[in-house]
Image (cartoon, chains in turn brown, cyan):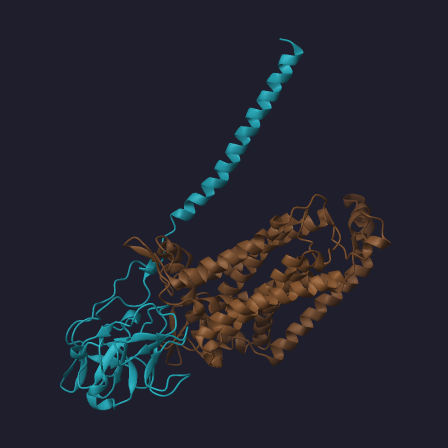
Length: 408
Length: 201
């Protein structure tokens, strides 16, 4: 009855016919993007829960004779609520899962060649989305303001500060003064809960809008079954929605499982900021940049006149990651396609691209291992060698495998 | 006027109107950016209080925090974080340690040390983390050293805190020391800039 009333006014039948029958191709790798999306939804929901109790301030208050920052104290308060600590851990784990799912999703798009014409724009939108997700992770890391947060965010400040000429102004603007200034935590909080989520929602919306407009790419075996231009798959309602609900609840249950058994960022263990610095490592998705910073020799300084120079931190923390991200963003423009590509292309048809992709993954892992160089007791010189040699070996092995496969 | 001319007029008019619409749109959006340029950082410029001759050193951490450090408190091989009394700010954090007098070599300023006591800035020149005193073996270093936990820079405590490993660009600046009435005190300020410098200066 309610439906009939609404339908008379909003023409829901037309909407149902147009959108609920939208066809979704089926392949397990399509779920990476969905997992990322659902992680974002879970992040928003758990984030709202956390906002009820969190106070963004690094001002010190007296708690039982000990002076601790207000923000840190409010995290202790959240932890003391019946479901507080688990929701906080689910929030943190969801951030890891979202970025991991984004990387897997990007890898699927890369190795299936579907970044090519006509999907170049959506690849770029995806890169923006990925960068925003990492920024959300970085700003979120700072908010508990325990000793780990304050040191890690302080390093972020120093990397920005080391940019010649403009670095100091940029760092002071971004962190509202020299971190940790009184305004730093409120400003990072604003980025984390307002600015970045808004931009993320906008980019995710654009990403999906373009996807709907251009229709899904499909596995190449679909080409032989369905007529060209038609999508072979299942309708959004009820089949795809059931699958989506399954993926959503599966993601949610995995997150609760992880949060229950693997506590992340246990603020009580690390304690409030102190004068001493603990052994800090960045999160795994930034470990490769940390690895680069460790690899660059301290004497790699490019002087720029008398007042400034390009320091190794700028080379390792900004220039090299920037170059790598730019190369990834420009991947679709390295191919010239006349016809739009709507079916997955076997990776072996792009021997150089595929080998470079594998080499990049090996380099990412090698750099991350370098992040633990001191703990693993690997000499830094060895790290420098394997970071360059291993990707090259990976490139040629992949290339040869593809060549051999094509000859057969 | 002929009909054709009117059509052309309409065409030009539309072009001009579209252009004006564009300018208005860009202008309206652009003007919203202007306020962002006027945002001030919350804290004003803070200048570090310089350490002067006679500033007594106090423990910066631990159960004795705030208490003066007596020469008899620190035996050979021990080190601690310290502050100049009354000037307890992060950039004035000092790493004080004691070694045998004959262990020091250049470029340590021997006249800055006093009876085996030696002090460097505790702020790493790389990313501004607090360095630590490691009297024992760690990784491949089996002699006392100063270590930064952030990026594993290692500083040679006996040779002017020069960088032995890791990405730190400069040695830690040294602090001249004196001993008055059995209490360790500074004999002046650090001999170089503290911590990382903006723009890689």
